[in-house]
Length: 463
Image 1: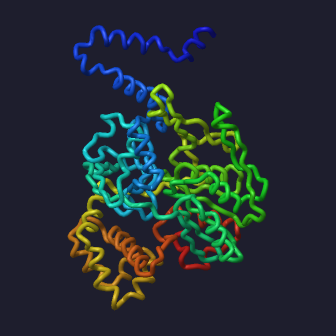
Image 2 (image 1 turned 120 degrees about the vertical axis):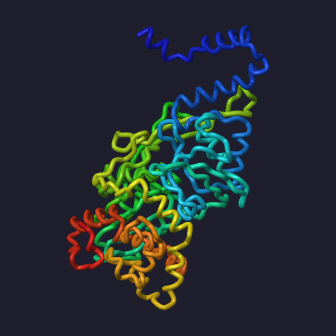
Image 3 (image 1 turned 180 degrees about the vertical axis):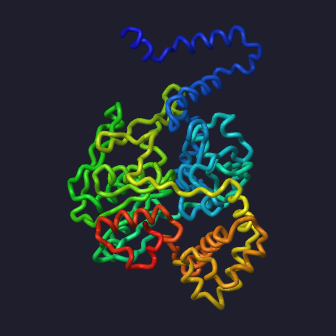
């Protein structure tokens, strides 16, 4: 027991002896600046705790203050870490990063030429590098599984779009709702969509690629699904002064009672994971999709008096507990696992080539004026049938690609849905043709709500 207690103590003797040995024997004394070595030691100690802990030097703190004030804005990437590799944990909706094609789990190798892994940058330092004055650009070297080589992408910084709720009522009375984040106004917007839908038979809450957000708004969102007084989760840390144990309960007077499903994936992050964990744990909604990212902890910056409070440490001070369990580090596992089909390793490059050369845009431009009505119908539901598209076979041949006709049909339809969304000023959502996770969620809700899926042609691919 005595040896175990000794190992739990911070052994200052190691650092003291290191200092003495360096001071006595190290050949390049100019590299032995104690101020620099102390800072590097502090960075190493913080980094050894967990991915979200970080030593914050004076420059780091000033940059963070500018981020919080809104003077510096980002590219729309929430950064996490998988092993030693920094990755896009979530990509914000309609952000510069989303427009540039970033996806969850894309690996971030360099920022403006600075090597991230080799230089041992913390997540705080990475996030700071991704924030600039509005309009300034950031060059990011990114690698995605399936690519032959990494790519350099230049992205302009801009203020994030306010979080909102995208919603549509699917055939049979199922409300599909996708919050783009969890922030002020989102629970109220979702409540309004629920009220507007009327006699709901089911609800699908899409939290895929959702970066989470405010804890208070997460509680309010959960209150729309769980009766007032229902236990939700608790937070608990070690020090009561900064992370007192706190129980959270639903405060809603009236919650929707229809069967529900919550869609999750590897880009579901932070309090979005918390919401999914609660709905799943309380048996309120079936979780459908992939395991979430696994960030279930709370951080706080504590200033260091030894440096005159010019530096601090970002420290994990508490975790979320749902039904006595944590999801930090592991993520929230789905009730219904849906492995999204991944294209063959060579296909993404060919898809990108068609998009970069704007072959999709030229097709849409040449057919939209004369056959816009048909294209709108196909954008909503095309039966996965390329022959329904006017002039499709000729267009496919002109691509001179190794992609098959269903690959190019799917590519064209995605572009067509985006184009129509821009024309109408309202994004097309709830893709019942290609979205296998949504299809499984519809099947789950329909089976519990007694909805006959054969009554709607749009549910042809739902099983």
